[in-house]
Image (tube, rainbow, N blue to C red):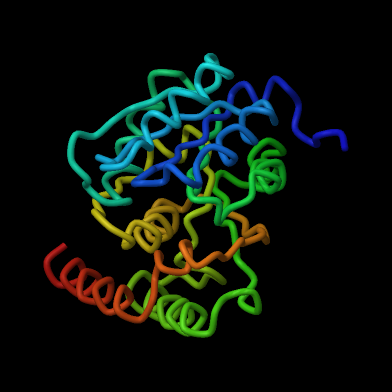
Length: 236
């Protein structure tokens, strides 16, 4: 099927992928992205397995599409994503996407997520996972976080904890992300709201496996994020 995104716009798009111990999952993700014509900045977040070796193997196949940045220590998805946002600036991108590297997000959704930016309708996009597809505990935690995001940040979204998001370079230059862990998802939404950045929501596929279900925002993680939100609200 013909892509709805022109080659010129794909060449101007960079996908930021934080990766921590994803050796058994990352290769099909990044090679699918490369096959679709998109560029990548992969942040190896201090992996203790052979994630870096797997990425390097794929880079041999797609040397111009895959760019690797490594953190010596595991810093968490928030810091790794920030590092990717900073690293991507050297390539002068027009559009930036962040997504998971573990196979939970489908590269097939990239065109749909990018399209509102390319068309000029929005400067940021939030990839929304259908609630019906989520495991019950994950769906409950996500609903709680949606409510907390509304209370603390004053913005109403369908999926505050999504890791699949996109923005223009202009929007990226306006936002400030400081979160270390999964708070980055709510913080991203707060920043686009506080900076009056027009955004759209786009429905995405989510592929749940035992490995991907073990990560992300569950009830325990939601409690940690709530504490971080309260600290931010009280102390800035």
